[in-house]
Length: 173
Image 1 (cartoon, rainbow, N blue to C red):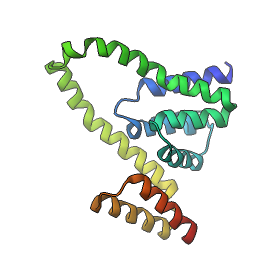
Image 2: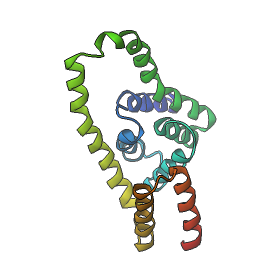
Image 3: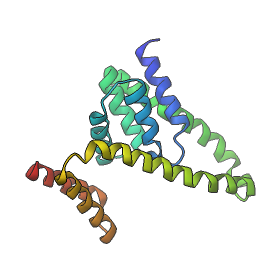
Image 4: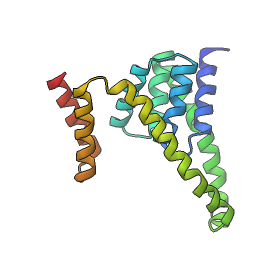
């Protein structure tokens, strides 16, 4: 199978199960591109997440774009990005037609209520996996605690916090 088709199909699979947003899909992206395919290392994946956070757009799309570029250049970037958005585009096109009809459905509400805890589990799984790579020493733990403290106690823009953490990293590392 050509690399471009493999990129497309891998990110199509990721996009098909990207319910709950970018953070919920991080563990799936990691499993597919780091563990199963070996296209990037866990350290590179952590960097992709950081870059994806600092650039506009959904994290899954940004990650697909970056990984596609690394693996297959500009055309690889195109195919990976196309793959990750295909299912969402199709589902949103169909769902928008029927949204009003099923908006008050008890089955739909129950289904969404059941998925919420699973999505939190996926986010925690991604956090733990990325944490193993990111928290290598006491300084990294301090930066992480400082960022969490800022975000929980102040209404600081997360982008500003990322920039501040980068500046702190330049100073202490």
